[in-house]
Image: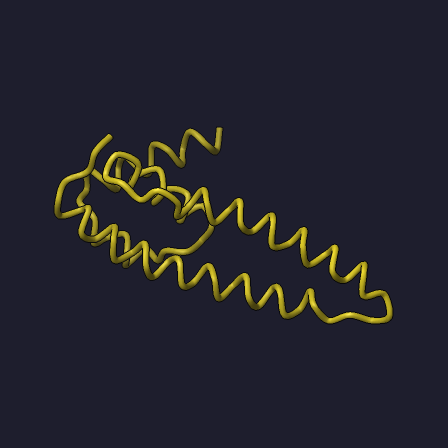
Length: 108
């Protein structure tokens, strides 16, 4: 499922923007989760679980960015709410349709 060169260039840019958005979101979650009362060990465990879960999500949306899996990564980024409609419009109609097919399959 390789994408066209023009879509690949857009993907690389969107990948960077979405990764920054994701990291910002996670760091905000970490800040809230790190507010401890008296039980620091429990706080640590909650924070560790949060980071581990978010790391798995990050891997699914951002790891191994290649032309052959860019459409799947884009679909995962969209699933996480990391890309705007305006940003997606930068992609070709073909790429947008392929992403939509993936997202429709996930909904069913």
